[in-house]
Length: 357
Ligand code: ASP
Image (cartoon, rainbow, N blue to C red; front, top):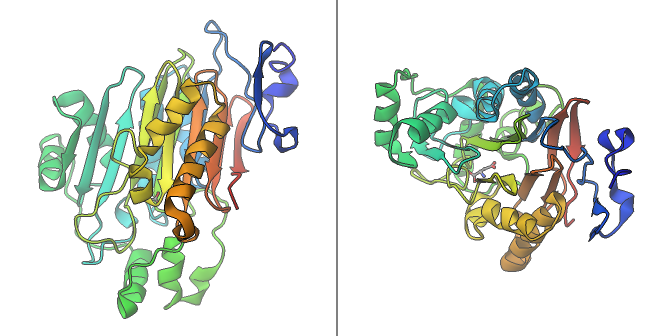
């Protein structure tokens, strides 16, 4: 265990060569490319960690780290972090995201703290920061989830402003492209590129790994603060060109997001319907509770989805990121192409997730 906790081990390591993971009486042995040795944190001296989905997670992590690095609370960190992505005009998250098939952007978001407090909003329109509305639901109402018009009314009563019902430039192009065929057929990892490409080939370029560049429509973040507390957040414009009223996994506690402060925190991205059917985030937490590492736990649930979907699994992407109480982070995806950002005291880095294929 001592060796595992050494300074070298605390650096970000690609441990893919280690083979099958195991637990021994000397400690936890990480094993896949996603097992990042961040060191175990004695409660007296805990090193904060932030993990976020996709490359947009790099910018989001920086904002979260500003809170955590100053000894701030993890709930503030995960809210502030994903707000950066909600603000991005070139990102598919938030009001600049792809609309539903009727041309309206509808947003889903959830947040959960270290004491099982949670809040979420779904099918929310014209409000810039759904994650902050979700937090208000958690803190100011007796409920966990508000949807649609009720969620919007609540947001307005809390002082949020009503934004215009318009589409961002990219979303407009994307929607116009989609309207040509009006087929609901998401492409895994890169929904907007497919639709837009029918109009504008320049948008077929691979997503850049720079702050704020989009390649998906969700950001999920999980973090550990120096008090040893975990929290998580998730915010999305959902599946592009979905049916009006469709809600994905992101605002559903236990599916898109789950936090158990005794065990770990998990957030999902990808095909929401298939995350919901296995209560994805909660299922990953339960696997960690039974002793699996974060990456192993993610893999276990992704494999379950693979089995359930059979040959249809090739048409969907599902990814999980997980962080345990010790500050160890991991991820796993159904298909390659998923990446995630991890910020520790040693820096903010992007990792390619392992996947089934
Ligand atoms: N999980 C989100 C949803 O199904 C989409 C995504 O992660 O891109 O709404």
